[in-house]
Amino acid sequence: MDRIENTAVHVEGLCMAYGERTVLDDVGFDVAPGEVVALLGPNGAGKTTTVEIIEGFRRRDAGDVRVLGVDPERGDDAWRARIGVVLQSWRDHRRWRVRELLGQLGDAYRPYSTPGTTRPRDVDDLLARVGLTDAAHQRMSTLSGGQRRRFDVAVGLVGRPDLLVLDEPTAGLDPAARREFHELVHEVVDHDGTAVLLTTHDLAEAETVADRILLLAGGHIVATGSPEAVARDVAGPSEVRWTAGGTRHVHSTHDPVAFTRELLATGDVDDLEVVRASLEDAYLEIVRRHETDARAEMEATR
Ligand SMILES: Nc1ncnc2c1ncn2[C@@H]1O[C@H](COP(=O)(O)OP(=O)(O)OP(=O)(O)O)[C@@H](O)[C@H]1O
Image (cartoon, rainbow, N blue to C red; front, side, top):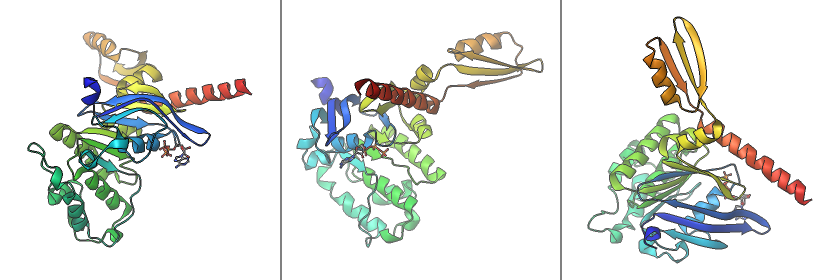
């Protein structure tokens, strides 16, 4: 029990259907404090459904879910104050000005300050961190899509959450804003020990920010591990490419470190490159395998 109490998110045997359509079938995973976990999967795989259940916005059909030790269906305001949420689309408060609205939303967290955790975060500092200082006095209705997304991330962080749940946080952000967001995630994790659960379709993003990925397909978690481990296990060997005496060589290996060490010991290498299997290769392969299996199962039951 202690293990579950100390886990930021604990999900076990989670099932969810919309009418006849089963979306989640016996899903289980944990997120530890200070861990960044990316939930991946094709369109309609059930990522948003999963995060909405965790946020307490959607009732599940079955399974055990604990978020910061509490069942989200029974979470009170003090529990909610410890969770930062960035939804897929949040289009309201058009007439408010940016700084004013963030300050107002932040004030709701004030009663939940503790001796070790000052709530809310300083609004001007947060606006600077998400790149909205220059837009601080603009009305919400005048923000661009990307600025609006930066604001959404600020809303998720303003209460200095113990758990931050983000649904496609960087959709619509330009590459610079995307990189700033990744740095911000690393900072809140390192500084505050925040646990982060995010959904994304951007596999490079998952590789950059996540300690661990969960790949959801056909209602199940079909792969889990560090991005490197999943890529290595599924997508096959790495390629070592090198030049020696003016000649190019290529060798496929599951252990590029050992191979490279031996190669360098020969002393005859002018140029060296290791091309690892990418998470994208692994993702496409897992989803393809899963879809083939699901089709075969459907045909067998006809
Ligand atoms: N309120 C609802 N009522 C009925 N069906 C729903 C509802 N919400 C989601 N669904 C269906 O459940 C499935 C999973 O949807 P969900 O939004 O959780 O997937 P997702 O993995 O987040 O997809 P995407 O990557 O497209 O955002 C989809 O087939 C969707 O059409």
